[in-house]
Amino acid sequence: MARIIAVANQKGGVGKTTTAVNLAAIIASWGNRVLLVDADPQGNATSGAGVQRGSFRRGLYHSLVLDEPVASITLPTIVPSLEVVPSNKDLAGAEIELVEVEQREFRLRRALASVEPNYDYLIIDCPPSLGLLTLNALTAAKSLVVPIQCEYYALEGVTELFDTLARIRRLHNPGLMIEGLLLTMYDERTNLSAAVAADLRDFYGLQVFQTVIPRNVRLAEAPSHGKPIISYDANSKGAEAYSRLAREIVYESKSAGSGSGGAAVL
Ligand SMILES: Nc1ncnc2c1ncn2[C@@H]1O[C@H](COP(=O)(O)OP(=O)(O)O)[C@@H](O)[C@H]1O
Ligand SMILES: [Mg+2]
Image 1 (spheres, rainbow, N blue to C red):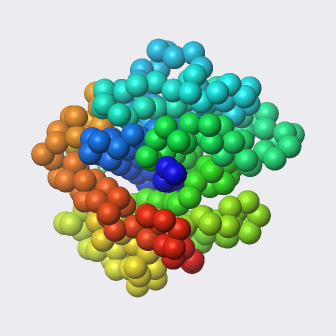
Image 2 (spheres, rainbow, N blue to C red; image 1 turned 90 degrees about the horizontal axis):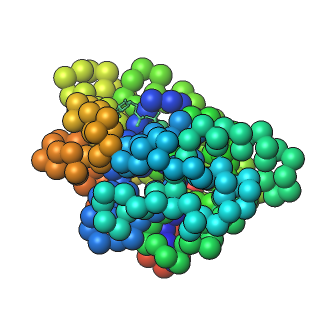
Image 3 (cartoon, rainbow, N blue to C red; image 1 turned 135 degrees about the vertical axis):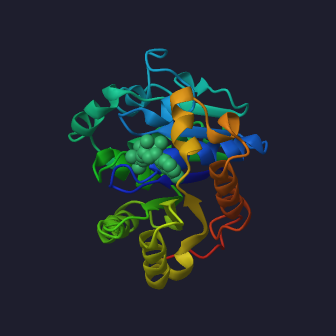
């Protein structure tokens, strides 16, 4: 069974897409079959993985709303064994068009079920909202990574996300685990970053990944070249940090392995 990991936080600009793309690419570079699912109409994971806007006609929208098989819309990337389910602004329509549909929170889970056996990891990049697309991602996923930017209001919104998580567990997906909270854009020169990190660890303890992602300009440049960080600058601090994170997730995760891993309940 594939591990299905959603990367979610309803705040924009906290590092969700950067995390989804780079985790997916690094885990694939270790020989795993990985599917990156772009569930954000902004399509940043799609372009970040090197699939150009305009180079595809059908994306996740066609699968969620029109029932087209995911396998028929999946595209290869420059990283061998990494494939992507692309998205563009069409997907914004799904938020509205699915409202009337029966079992509307289960569309993504259903769509992915047919391709799950072909992969070791499915990584879902969520949009910056708690709308229907994110609810679909949390219903389809087995675990969740929550990137949190090291800034003043970082923790605002996390409570709301966890309320949503509790509701999803109760209604749709009782097994959904927290893979971890991830500190992103950490700037070691500022006291603020250190203070946010300390607060988060005080509050959430072991739920916070050991790995902290530093602010690193190479991570910000890579998407404009359509490359994950390991293809753009494998020796950068950003590449190193995401490799450490991938190791935590692949080798040390509570959600890895068969079943008995304790669900982290917050
Ligand atoms: N660790 C980092 N260091 C520097 N820039 C980053 C880092 N992580 C993300 N960014 C940049 O910050 C912006 C927001 O990141 P992104 O991953 O798109 O966030 P989200 O998907 O949560 O909206 C992007 O321009 C991205 O390139
Ligand atoms: Mg994004």
